[in-house]
Length: 305
Image (tube, rainbow, N blue to C red; front, side, top):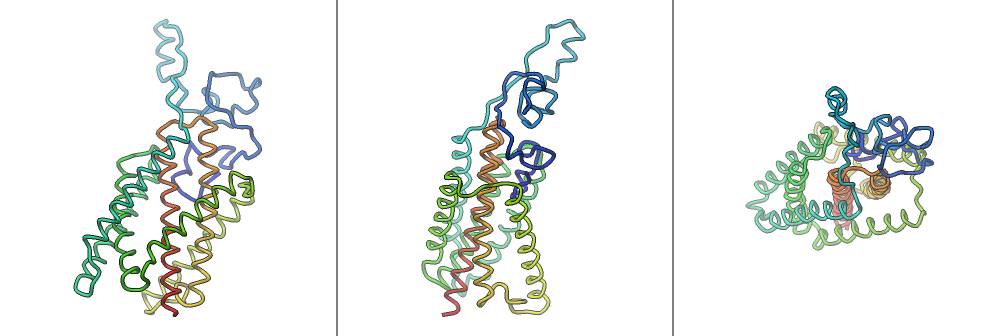
């Protein structure tokens, strides 16, 4: 399965020729067994067997050992990702994001005299964060330094934009957006664990198609805004802005369900511990998406009063 977050669309988190084997029983990595004895072996990218194409289970010195007469060694197994690893890494990235957001809020005033400078710093931090996110997304392995740096710069952007909305448009908007994001996260987690949300191929296809359409519409709206002025086609203001704000939040909730499925699969399939950084990165991306949609929706609602 290809997740909504590009960081999950890599060898560690995809199987069945790019689609999730939702009907396939998960199997943690262990000793190598024959494919006839284990019908799920090829579906598990972390099974400790060369036939499954698991780069973490292969012994790179196997041929050298045979050449010099040394007895073959068992595959080297590394630490496996656990839910505690995912929670710890996610807490780290979100903690850094919150700290830098708070510092940006306190140190970058948004009064009339300093608004342009603070806003420019926020936009610059957002661009740097986007570049870091893209670099990490295309890397084959998790880079904690990149992920932590992304969280820091993204926090600066969120701190500035939140301060602008909270101080100049709607007092208390930032806290409302935080509470809304937390409510969505908890609600989706409970619904997912209770089985009310079933992440299957049809669900993935629907979410990805809806997300693609949403992003394309926002891109067209941005182009009209740049060349025509105002808010372009009006997708980000007025009644249409409210509708698209709600749609954006719902898409973020769907992305969370996809992320939960990817984390669950990674743990069940014995993903290496460093993949927990990718899980934390993906969850952080989704939570930032939801927070910004809430903040935008609150600003639109208060502007229309």
